[in-house]
Length: 255
Image 1 (cartoon, one colour):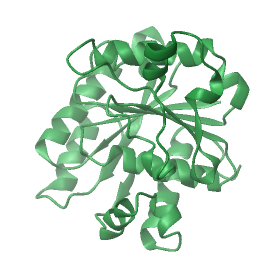
Image 2 (cartoon, rainbow, N blue to C red; image 1 turned 180 degrees about the horizontal axis):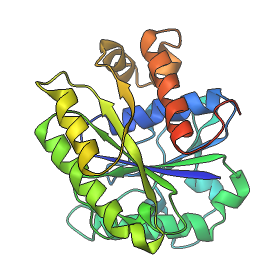
Image 3 (tube, rainbow, N blue to C red; image 1 turned 90 degrees about the vertical axis):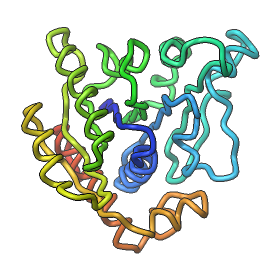
Image 4 (cartoon, one colour; image 1 turned 120 degrees about the vertical axis):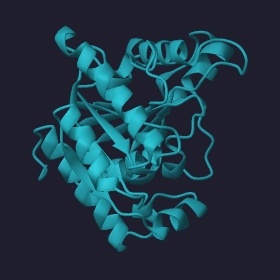
């Protein structure tokens, strides 16, 4: 089982990228699980349009431990297994601690054993890399961390903080930095800024996504690009990215 954590600044297009990448991996014949670790609980929304997924933390609040694996998951497009960790009640509790609770609950309930995914993708907000938000980097969770960024200054700043956190955890045997995913915003000196980021942290750009109106069109429909526009150039870009990420993890892209 390959476990990947994808981080990035809020609003950078991380969840859109991950959902399309998950759909592409599923199209390759892989069994994929996507776990949203953003308190907004909208990571997997494009994979199950029109279906409201109850978050793990909502289940814990409502039922303590009296719920089943089936209550936590929702099959999405391409049979991607969708899970949302959820967040605390607004104004109460810590979102980072909520992630810890949700991931521990998934493990104790035996979700991974039941579904036996080939690939697990954690979608993690990267604006703040505190203890809870760093949970997917820790031993036993992700094997590789990928960072989605553009060349915008705040996105680069967030990406650098995430990379620094991975670097600090390196000696503990935690997840390794697999590389950077450049989600273009067509800002000035974008390539140069991201190349400098990679140089600073001795990593690489594993894939580049062009800015495309097709992505916005699919979002208006509440779907992934692979479902809404499967023959589009952008769908092929996501398929290529999925292969590049798998290759960066050392996984056979033909499986």
